[in-house]
Length: 222
Ligand code: DX5
Ligand code: ZN
Image (tube, rainbow, N blue to C red; front, side, top):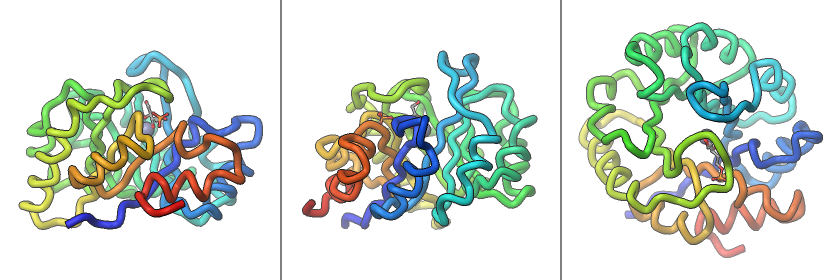
């Protein structure tokens, strides 16, 4: 059975000179979450935004802010992102030795906790912390940059995580991030994803195209 997927536009692909307007435009175009990619030039080879930008964007949308932390160390920055208005805070399983502690910290501070897996990390990596998470994020590109090609090798992992989540019986969202287009979205929806992150494909064509872009990613007619 296919569920109705939620769409999380990644503002990494938005016009950075007009970020507030871009967030308002995807919100009114039917997005479900605002995905914010945080990169540190150390865990991933790129730099993006910090908590001050998250705080500045917060008044521009009532949607949940889905903050994807590609940073190491991560613990010293969790409180700053939650204070800035992050609702879901996702950290990488590969970012340090104490991911269980990090997930606990996110929840203690009132956030929803997500765990992300790089393409080279197996599905089993989530097993010891499945009781501590509200979201599992499968990276379908190597993190660090938008506009990369979807790795079809990750579909097996998405299906495996769908089974694990269904078996555990808790309401954990399964999110997929990287190289999502209307074409790759179809296979990711079929594999059981709940949330699709899209940067390039969501922001292509400017604000007047965002509604159609989002509908195509959902598999709805434009
Ligand atoms: C990559 C980021 C993604 C990225 C997706 O490190 O986590 O969220 O912005 O961009 P597209 O959709 O262009 O692959
Ligand atoms: Zn992301």
